[in-house]
Image 1 (cartoon, rainbow, N blue to C red):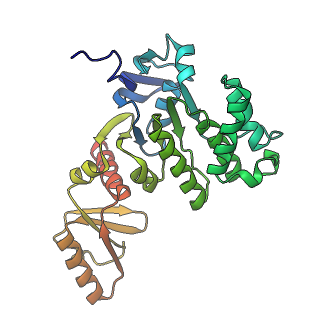
Image 2: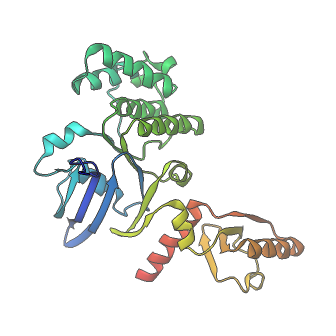
Image 3: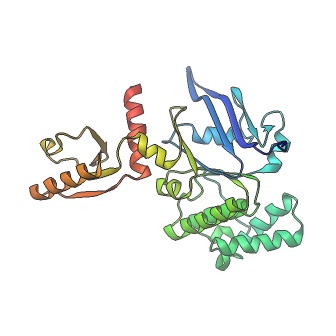
Length: 313
């Protein structure tokens, strides 16, 4: 039986992608031979510390920045040689974006949909839908100049999500939002994914990535450290439980535990369930506070990225 052309096409595919910047006399390699393939209809999270290369990748993939070498294809169209075609299939929420202050949220979303070619009635219907879903209805006709920074961010995210574009790049979309607003965004992202859109997400909120991601990649210093599922990442770090303690606890209390990560003013001990419960018992008897629970994506991320940067140094 024959397979239709494009049936297994990737939505986003990067091969050998490099981006080198000149900073005075220095050369900075922001992306170092990146290979990524994201299948159509997936939600893919791209994680890393500030300066790791996430936004550089998004800018290249969304046709805003030229690569030094290598290639990126969106739905099998090259972002450099077929820029206009790629832009028909993508929508982007960039970092630190703000709406036109004299427009209302309704006008912002509606005018953007009209610019993208939607008929007036469809644009109006889709605008009302996204305002309702994003909790913006009561602010729909208030000039953005009068809205808080969080509401302005929600307006820009609503504008992009209303497009239902085949491929969406969301670069820190919930930055500055309150917890309820973030969950509204999560809900609509999940709905858009269920309609067939591919979502490429960068975020510093690792609970967000853990909730939404089907796949993820972690980048550090321009190189991919990990690619897979959240569960696979937790297996790689070699622990399923963690204990959190103040960094001033006596080190003899931690003897026998190999994986201890300093995270700000606390110590993160990655271990087995039995090891975590044993440490909790010892800490409690010694009068020290301790928090014990299953390893989260955030803790696995800290372990992986921290170890990588120590090794490189």
